[in-house]
Image (cartoon, rainbow, N blue to C red; front, side, top):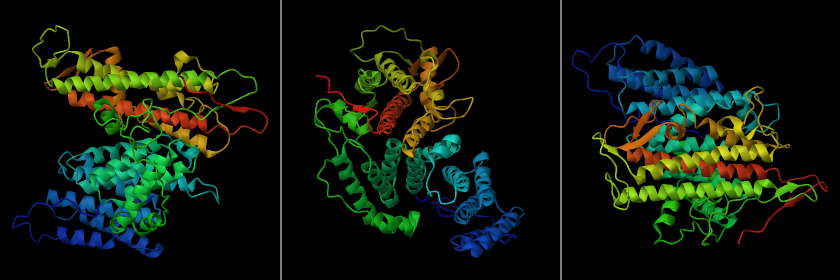
Length: 546
């Protein structure tokens, strides 16, 4: 999947020089033209020469007389061109130089605001390309030229920072729409390569919302769905219809795709064949039901569809395993009951979140008239009552589902840990051996599902894609958190923490989306193990509860 860099020098113009500064040796415009002229070199010899010239140019520019604005802009251009060239050349050393130059801008508190997301984008792309180059070097001769789930599990944190940076740029409403679209498309690429199709689809869709001309994002959605359709999955008619929509969109945006990702990517999307599916693009449910509309808007239906509710049935949350491999005569496996519990608890968390948001919307910034509580005014802008409490409970309940997914995996795959010691964030790899757990049968498909779950766990910790989810959950569980209309503290280690309502609502939706993704990845993991040796076991299925 193609990664694109912002054009050198995009979206930032240095300030005008004073009369005494014009004519200095090492004129900014000259350096800028020379750097841009090196971009686009092709072939080993030309690339090697361009990289050497760019390194020399950077050394020359480091001692030249320029204004601060000019130096920031040139540093960004040099970073962009270096990462472009080094990626084409497969030069890890030069990629590291491009990343270092981008990092200078991020570490400088005086860097102009418009350049910060673009420098973050460059750092993310450079780090991603370094990881890809090192992964390629690890392959055995003749091995497929594709992402290896085994390698990524072994280097589980290798792409955590790029994912975080791409998401940060994509969420920055002050960044140029083109930059946001490219960042989100690249985020989708590295998520999809790790089997995280739920989050990848959302990233690609958000990329198109930021930049509707990004044909590469449309093509990547189509490719994601094409591969889903090649597996034993539910919602095939729906997935095929959405695939057709985005394949056609990508083909209609060929010119823009060439600009963003190159002719080879555009050719790839042009080769996609439409299925002619008559399936629904989305089941929107009852238009007059605000709860259903809210679920559709936030993609929170617990079903393997990518849009909508998945069906027009009143029981639309249908995600479940295709079956379980058991030995002859075995009783109903416990995992069926466990998945029912997980589903029910997710649905309760989802409904709590909707109720909290609905009550807040009805009475923003004040106590809801239906809330019977009489609360003391603490004269500090605090907002007490049922709406923020409902959102906090929903957020914590959604993240509790994650730990219970790990407990279910521990039981189903007979890992052997005490349930009281199992946490989602620490379960998927043995901390002593570094080996993935549970141990799976042969083949990459199960490993890819396991990788999706393990990577997601890493993105809930520290400075990562979902920084507020786990912190707010811990603060809300062990300390006292309430909403405020004043300046919030955010999640802290103190007894009391405050959050504003927009932040709380966003964290709650994020937690629900993460829990939904993890549930679907876990279902995929179980389904990936449905190929028993002939005659040794059966695939067990159950009717639905009535």
